[in-house]
Image (tube, rainbow, N blue to C red):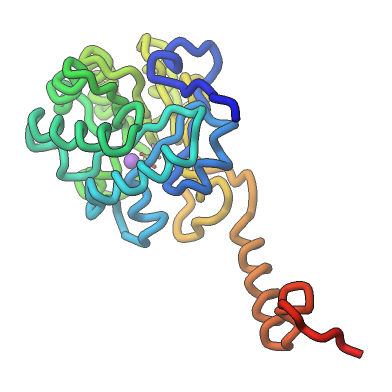
Length: 269
Ligand code: KIV
Ligand code: NA
């Protein structure tokens, strides 16, 4: 049994290679991803990917804590970040601290992530000053999907200046990194060049300080909706279907279970 030193926000910020990040919601997936990722994100995308919700709005702190615990148990090398869900931090810095402290204490995660730019700067500062490392999240903010008018690419025209100001505000508030989601490439690049904290892109730019994808998206396991920015590194959905079909056939023609899968089954003569 060897002990592996787990990445921390501090060690990740000092990394001189791109930060490799994927989402994880369960212990077995965390176990598979851990050796290859620097940062495992327990995203509130769990609501859509695992629970079949239409948006992330109904995800609760209890869900994030349960999945956060599973991912921390299943990993030993990657830093784990847990998303703060909609409604658990927007009210006040005090509310945010209460929920973030609960998440940190009950999961053992290394940091929390929350969506928002200038409007969340005070809250980010409040958490960071009290010992909770924070990842910001700007550009497309899925918890604000109704305000955005859908899942879309942001940062065209006037939006660009706002998002740049959001990036600066999140950095100045003390976030150790910031996710930039679904934002015009030149703007994502510019933000990544200007900021001194790492940017972690999803639908952003190769110039970002790291990249993140929803694991089920890049594995081909989430067929509902695939944004343009997803690259499918595998087609596991197809493999699952083929395996289920083979199993169904084996059950129906009684070739499963076979002698090797039963105890004391007489050999057929
Ligand atoms: O919830 C999520 O999965 C996320 C990442 C995709 C950045 O916030
Ligand atoms: Na999220």
